[in-house]
Structures are given as C-alpha cells and as structure tokens.
Image 1 (cartoon, one colour):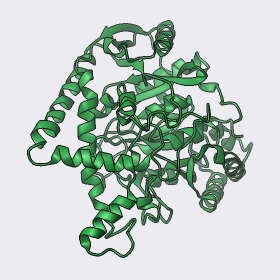
Image 2: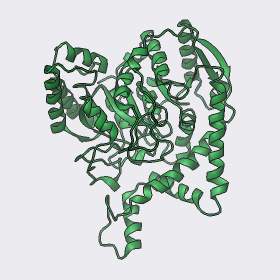
Image 3: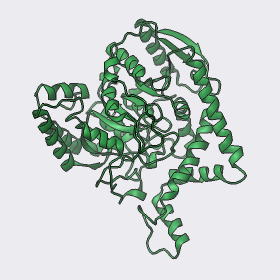
Image 4: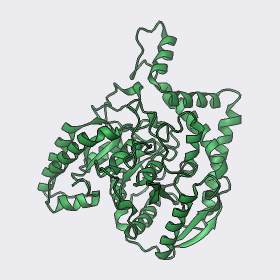
Length: 483
C-alpha cells in the first residue's frame, strides 16, 4: 500500500480494494517504524487521522467521491491546525496549539484528506537544509548522511521514503522545489496568491506561498486542486478561477516553446547536473517541444536582493514573538526589556536570529534606501526579465539546484554557501511566478531536479509538461534503498 501514489489510492478507494482506515493504519505503523531514521515528523496525529479516515469511509459509503476523499497526507508544521501543536520548527512555538485551522488545512479536510501529522522544517522556514529545526535535522532517505533540502525537508523526506503519498509545503525562495530536487520528488510552487496564506505562519509575506510535494505531477495536480482558490481572509489571495488541473495533463507538447536561459549554465553549476538537464531537454524535444536560448540578465542580482527583502520582512513578522502573548517566555524576567531579550534569545535559533538582525539593519534609518529600496528595484528588474522572456517562450527550463544534496553539517559554518544554493529558485519568488521541480536523474546516487517556470496562473501548463515527461521517463519511480 505504501508504494501507491495519490492517484492510485483514489482509484483503489473508489474500487473498494481497501478502506481509508486500513490504509491509514498501515501508514501510521510505517511512520512509527521508519521515521526515527529520518526525523521527518514533529507531531503524529493518530487519533485525528483515524477519526478522519472513518469519516471518509462513511462518506464514500454514502455515495460521495473525490480524489482526496480518504487520502492520507501531512502538513508542514507552519500550517495552523486547531488544537494541535504548530511549532514552525522552533522552541519559540513548541508549546503553541493553534486555535483554528489554516485555510489550506480546512480546505483539504473538507475534501476528505486524512492528516497523519505535522512535518519537520527549518525553524520559521529559514534554511535550505532542514538543519535549523529545534527538533533536530531531517535526514535524506537517499543517503542518511545528507540533507533533504529545506525548509520543507520534513515533508520531502516523508514522501520520498514512502511514509505517505503527498504533503503540503511552502516556498519562500525555493523551499518546495529544492527539497523536491534533493529527494526525487515533484514539487510545485504556485503563483503568488493562488493558495491562501491565512493560517500559514509567515516568514516573508510577499514571497511565501504554499504548494504540494508528491512523487508525480499527477499527484501534485490532485493536491493543488484541493489547496487553491480565493480566500477573503487573505488580502493577498487572488480571485481567479481555479481550473481542473488534472484535466489538462494529457495535452500534447507539440510546438511548446521552451526557453533555456544562458545564465543558468555558468561556472557555479555542477557539470554532471548540466548534462542531466540537457538530457531532459532532448526528451522534451522528442515530445515535440521547441527549444530556444533566452537571457535573464538580472539573475546575478537576485540572491543579494532576496537576502535583503526576505530578512527585512522576517524581522517585521517575527517581532510578534516577544514572550508576552504566546510562545516561549523566559523564567522570572526582571523587567519588560529583560522579558523581550531573554524570551527571544532563548526561543529563536542562530539562523533566525541572524536573519532578524540582517533585516532590522536593512530597514533601519539611513540604510533603508541603500539596501531595502534598492533590493525592491532589483526585484522589479527580475520580474521585467521574465515578462520579456515569456513574450518569446511558453515555459522556462533549467536546473533546480547547482549541486546535489550536501552532507549534514557541511555548510553550517558558512551560511552564505547555503544561500548560494538558491540561485535558480529565488527568482520565481521575487517575481511571484509559478515554478515546478521534477526528477531528472542522479549524481553519485543522489537525486537531481529540473525546474520549469511559467507565466502567472499557468500551473496547469507546468503540470502538463511534467506529466508528459514522466510518462516517458522513470526517474520519478525510483525508491530509496531501505524504504
């Protein structure tokens, strides 16, 4: 059962080959047995899962149907879940039980999805390795000595190890796509505003976006269908009709114009990954796609711009965690200032503290114009580059990451080295574009991803291209040894 995709589970439940309760019990037992190797879960919700599974079986018995009805999933631990710990991977929120469900959680629950638990993540979604979590690092199932990517590494590791078929995740600078690449999954960051951020604890509000992580594009289409849509509780949510993502998966790629930016193939890219990307291009050409070289001239400025904007927004968002209202509070503070200082110093880890300080500096008097305002101007130039490119091509293709997953601890002493691993992913967040990573091969036994970017609200196009590619390749079917 654990090898089934979401689509296969939906068919099995519809054909009464097994019940949601049976499947849920199998997967909960598997998580209990195997997750100690991975540390991919922060909280297991056995009682809730079994209750939801029984309810889903009853709904099916009454004639209801739906791809997510009875399907087991997990939520990244920054989606608020009523009455269940929502920690954001931080000591600061270790004792926080959300009083309400995030919109994404509520929508998927209404569709009948079964929540198995909350997955581990980089603290407050800040990191590219899932090593900054207060609950310990997550291990990559393909090699337990390597990172699974971040910040959605818990969701990625759990799905890659076949502990469950799919999970929710979030992407601020590549945190869905990079873990997908490192663990041989398909991961989709939707257009900014396509999925509600209400109840999703914020890191950088103008960049954060929720999305699905699964083994196939078909499964991502199913999960995105349940997550997407307008939400009046979220002022950044876009009131745009949600298409049937599964319906467009069978479209031909004949004549599809794929742009390949020359800037992607620079000295920083592992040549073995470059070769796998070229192989992916050839595969898509066989399916009828037309390849064209394009340019994104301002890509070189994206990382410095991102690492001004994101920490600036983080310093503002995380100011609410002060020991007064909720979250960690220090013992016996001498006064209000001592309460603030020690609660924040004890509650936040080193990476979060680093980004808060960088952000506060960039927003301070005398530096706002020099750093934050300039970064926002660069952000506009990055968006303009994409708009010009999409006048010539339908999608953009390139590597998801410049290197395969690195060893645990390898970049801990040099945060900038980890930041540089986001070079191909952060531009989509700066511009608000949808992006997808899909499996494209292996380097030294570690998975490699190819990234696709599309114009606004063209998630269906990305899923279609990935699905057609996966019908003609088998990289996404490979399973890590021991799982």
